[in-house]
Length: 469
Image 1 (tube, rainbow, N blue to C red):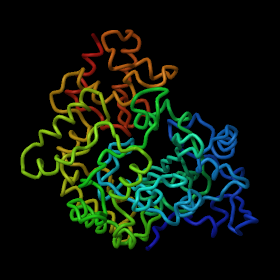
Image 2: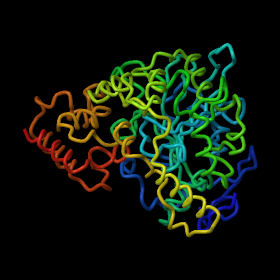
Image 3: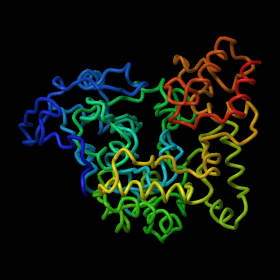
Image 4: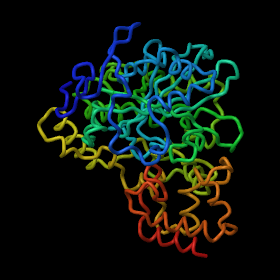
């Protein structure tokens, strides 16, 4: 791959870019002294109040946990994680692993996900007998933000722990982080420091793991999530494990076209993704969840939807499942068609991406790969409410994931419960109205920008009217 100019991507080469560098006595690898690094110029607003680097590492490791990932990151000496490949190695996912990409996500990063910028899951490979692996750590990643989601099973209790692994790069210190630094392969290299946050650390933010992985509410069992658990795994690719699916025929070429000049995606070589037979597939991820005893999924995507939607009309099965999410009883059901993108937007952004990566266009000209959804998909994946929705319906659909009364009652966000709009105190409603009117770029905006688009004027007015009652 041709590296984009303008950043110190490899800390091994330019110590002046990243602070003082020593050497790991065990591996011989260069190790950056975190204490010599400059402060992050524009920290994530939701994480800025939390410790970072060594302080966060000490806090995380002060409370013993029984899962493999905690044991790895809290081992002495602290692991040297400088890129995605070294993270895979620390997570024991550099060998005997499987992976799957999805072109439509219902997770906290759903606004970023399409076949052009897919969400990647890397996980332990299971046997044909679907035997539970001795250890289970899985990583979830999509380009666009400097973090990786982690799930890891406790070796003694069998419970799952969830983490947010965040990383820093040179551009975080000099203010040069731009779209190219987040959406191209640059984001996977040149990590200078990292911070690992537990699910407890982030539970009062829009990055909360439990809003999806603890569907029965605070204090209940946490689960792994895969809503498209059965054939045809409509949005997963590459998919040639059992038989080639429509998702592989449509989405794999879209991905390969956009990333033809990349060397890897999420640490997985592009050639491996292109040629995968049984290493990469939704079928492999299904096998893991079955082996882990996680086959029962809330509001799981019904396989009949593909045939119904392909017939050219709406899918009654999907409409029924969509109604469940509209009522706030589950996270959104995946899109009923294989491709969530607008063809014209996808073509323009693919061309822009390739031109920037090969140096034919300035990096500042890069179009946002995340701004690619069709108008229909935006509604059906829950980025915007259905046109003409009532204020109560708007609030229920877009706020239920985090504000349905099932979360930790000790959190400040628990005061806003969309299932109790009629009984909600006036001051809580007034604060919600103010947050609905925050600028689109504000971290206080409701719904959070990670969860949904800014509300259209009519639906915004309807939501405010409902809260004004």
